[in-house]
Image (cartoon, rainbow, N blue to C red; front, side):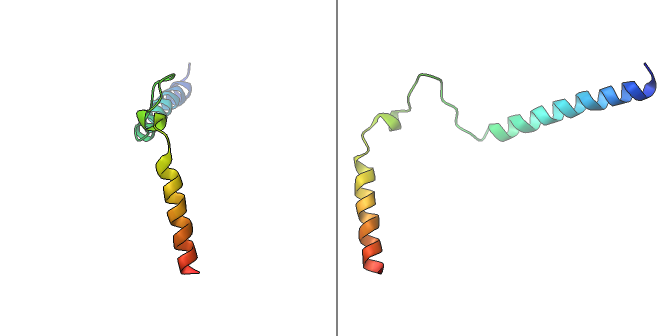
Length: 64
């Protein structure tokens, strides 16, 4: 192989490694859960959600 082909191949490999590191850095911000396991917060009934919706609607009525 010529020097040009070797240089392009090296740049390609370095680019792939750099992009993989960038993806890892970006995805480290997300909370990953294991498959098949539920988050304990999701298992609790959502009674508070109904209360907060009522409060939002009452605040919207007050502002009108």
